Amino acid sequence: MPMSEADSVPGRRAVRFSVVDPATGEAFDEARDQQPGELDDVVARAQRAWRGWRADPAARAAALRSAADAVETAGDDLARLLTREQGKPLAESYAEVARTAVRLRYFADLAPRTRRIDDGRPVHSEVRWRPLGPVAAIVPWNFPLQLAAAKFAPALAAGNTMVLKPSPFTPLATRLLGSVLATALPEDVLTVVTGREPLGARLASHPGIRHVTFTGSVPTGRAVAAAAAASLARVTLELGGNDAAVLLDDVDVDRIADRLFWAAFRNCGQVCMAVKRVYVPARLHAEVVEALAQRAKTVAVGPGLDPETRLGPVNNASQLARVEQVTEQALAGGARAASGGHRLDGPGYFFAPTILTDVPPDSPVVTEEQFGPVLPVLPYRSVDEAVDAANSTGFGLGGSVWGTDLDRAEAVADRLECGTAWINHHAELSLAQPFAGVKDSGVGVAGGPWGLYGNLRPFVVHRPQEA
View 1 (cartoon, rainbow, N blue to C red):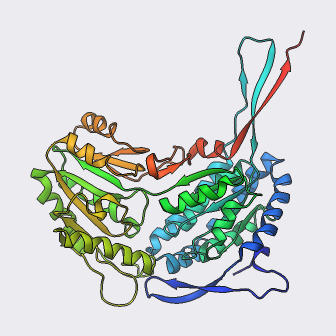
View 2 (view 1 turned 180 degrees about the vertical axis):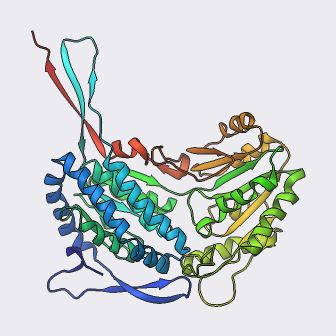
View 3 (view 1 turned 90 degrees about the vertical axis):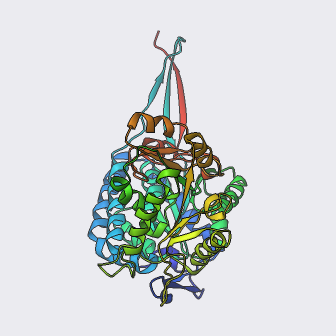
């Protein structure tokens, strides 16, 4: 794998850390454990590169399109490496690589619009847009390439440069992606740094960084925001969710069961906007539990490189322990596992796809984000009760309502306290739409033109009108 300049420091012996294949639980490669002191040089180079990168919008757009071509050319290598370190089925890795290229092309075609202000004064006023400078992106392990692209594509299109730090659980595919992009982008426009903490904390607090964009947990997001405050850098935080799906009493269970199951279990449930709680009318509760449990019992679970696999492993040992803990707490509190409820025997970080019923509403698997292949299904007596329960947590990323009467479903969806509400589907996004959460699910907006403008600042020019 080619190394960027950030990988080699003259006179210093590189420290490395192991990268584990979650399908086996064994290390299969290593990554450079870069130290916080190395960031000064990395950020300085990003600052120098910014001067040229910001100056020519047409050249930027052309470079981003070339970068998209390069990603597609390297698609096989990227997808296989992503599956090795993340665990997801290979088909999903190919899809993630494809979305990375599509996102680059989408933002290459976006440009900020100059706006004239007409306020009745004899002054010609225009709002123009300028890039911020070097941007830091810190991304998690569930969608390493896709979430990285969601950050670097709009930032680079806006004329910023970027220092990108992947999770230490999934550094390799991102490092390879950085090398691929380097064939199309000017030097130091995008630099990938890998390492364990406190590298991320130092990057977030670095005085040369003007915008910090982070995806991850709420506690870490708060720490990132506090670190960025030291230099008054802008922050964009996507901090996960505990999305509720509300099924109405006219729902066709057979028709929606597959969509609902995969809305919860895609990527082994490790999706910030996955369905993580299901609220069902009491009279339909047993039918919904049975439909979801039947799918959980029969879905093919295994290594992501096996073409028969539909669900891979949990990504890492600590997350597997978390999934096991919240499941055991629920079972100890009176819940019943209609399917799964335990780790799978054998190597790797596998947990049986689990449908829980009779779950106490105050159980952590309901009130917190489990981020794994476990789904509680809870009965309700009235729609008001279901909406109140859906809105009762500190999260507010997404939610969905499922039913036959679309007008009624939309009226219920409008009552959900979240950034995006879907009807009869879940977690489907367009590149052209904004993506943001409320409450503890985040600060700022990503996606579409909103994502572009989030990487720009307004610059106003006033001049007298001609006599």
